[in-house]
Amino acid sequence: MVSTINTHFAVVPSPVGDLTLTGTDGVLAGCWFEGRKESARLLGDLRRDDQVFAAVSEQLASYFAGELRQFDLVLDPTGTPFQHEVWGHLRAIPYGETRSYGQVASRLGSANKSRAVGLANGRNPISIIVPCHRVIGADGALTGFGGGIDRKRFLLDLESGVDALL
Image (cartoon, rainbow, N blue to C red):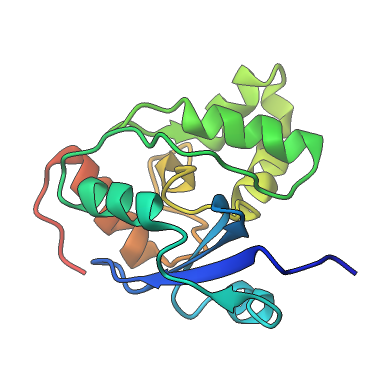
């Protein structure tokens, strides 16, 4: 059993609903949208401490204010080596830009891995900060976002400078 002595969660408000942050010793392991089953399941043994993630909260507030384009945080998401590779590529997608699943797969060396990229994208535990919302269908369609298509559209509109409605 993993010790949860220094494992915390915090809840921060955002324009897309409350975000639940999880991690150990202030290192971010999760950023979950309100209502996601993962966030409720993960909180069982964690202690709430809204101050432990003050830096994350500040950067998220700056992001939503349109002032921050790249997060500077220590992250520790749990995943397979392939998932970590995909998440690294997601973090390299510039603010305000999108990539298709196939484009991300090609960057990994095989356009045939687009389905695997989609699965890894869907398992991203650090929404917004690891910008899985920037991955879209090959035809430009907004597909497969765990936070819901309305939130995905809001985030993409925010980054493109369009007045977003949620």
